[in-house]
Length: 302
Image (cartoon, helix red, strand yellow):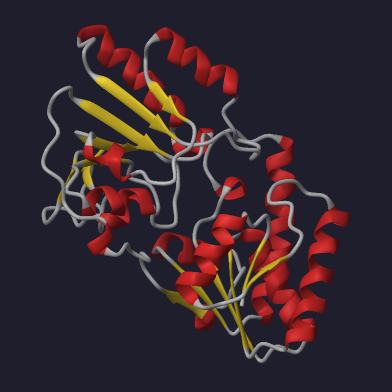
């Protein structure tokens, strides 16, 4: 069984066809801090787990990690596991507004409760693991370093180099924390000297507090800085026309987009940030332009 909110007919059919699992709905407001909405999520999951009696629940993403584990505990599910794929808005460096501080305090309390009830908590990078242990959000004996989830290489075959026109690509939800504004500013500076260079931004608008507005993205497009593809079901054609993949993110779990770009033999520029630095080992398959860390963002580390 796979629980998720907002299934489309196509996605439901794809998941059930590929896994043989039953795709089930539950109510979830991904962003926001509405206690009533979150209580509705907890009740719906608890009743579903009580009815279905699964032997194990594996949750991922912040709210499912909290309410999925709590619901599994209330329903008596014997195996309870959480996967921290990234720390999200509340823990990402940047502007410290009142809402962000409130969300972080609330989420820390919920994590402490939920992870005290989980049997194991899996992390994709060591920075996230150490931060959660240091802040008392999870006990060290429960924390497991999983590493990057990876991509199926047969589905992401290497592509010939793309050199004309020189094209820089960023694939991400349009969030400040993904470095979207930095990407646009880099485009402005580069195109001032090399107007033929192409910058390609692929990703949807978002409701996260750090979301970039549609008007701001449209302004970049009208200025001629970049091209914007709001949605695509397959990024591989765009990676084939990419010269260099760019991910100026502030923090990640281990970014899938970088792994996909590497699989297709694309050089990558990314940041010396948790998760981003995990996809390359300095001196082996990448270069750090700052101090060489344990491992650094794939390709060239800024």
